[in-house]
Length: 402
Image (tube, rainbow, N blue to C red):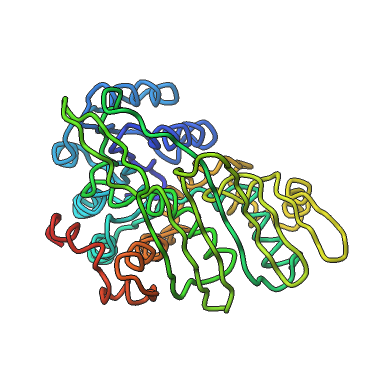
């Protein structure tokens, strides 16, 4: 494609988180209309694809094709880029098909349902010379980028030492007669894991950005209460964990304790604190998606700074070029930024801020937590990446022929 031509974009998977992607693209289209155009929407439920096409048509006159099968879309449409928001177990299959057809891909996290699946995406990206980007929005928020600046550049908490991220809650299980409808995340071969794997990769990525690479983990992962679901009139039970406790050991020598449960009645709390030699950053949101703007930095000299108050200082420290890179066109909405980064990487021929290999390293930590629980021992992240430890993943790999 010529750099002067708009990127021809298709979206595959038009439910759930894809709606945030769609809103992001629509905002980009309003600000930079010649950057791209929507050419197709694809979902197994035609009505969902039609709904996305109607929304997208509010910002362009060109028609948008509707498909229920990816193969048909790739056969009939000349697409330059595909945003993939399908179930986890299908990510590697859909991404490889799209790249083989000549399209760059943005994959909703996790990149693959296992490390082997993620590696298949990375290998295809190299073989076909296509971009494979990971949709990782959390660390792109203004509060998260401000926290990185405050911790890594300004050193407001001193040398990072340790953190505690704990979220304790109670979610009573439904009765079988009132079981919620089955969805793909309840299927081990489509979902791959629970919150450790799903929202967890957001947290892992932010920890890697703030504190460097994680070297090993030691964890316990449990399901303390069964949760029924109704699948076509039959009761099936959720396989996913509702509780975990994990120690994360960083290459720098820093350590972190990350714990979550939804099976703790009687007393609920969330406590997320990052400690350094000169103070601490106390977060105010949850144990997955922060840091948030309400976070406080408490220093040993008695000073207290709110993260939201530091945001202007951070923005003023940036050059115009840095601002355009981190917050293009002044956009601070994280999903819009991740979508813009993908499109701009295609236009400029650069790597995206978070590529598939980076995404694989995030999920390798999450998977290592499962592997540690399965083996009862500490697990090195590199051993998971190298395929030396895959007790938890073995049946998933076998299911997908990996």
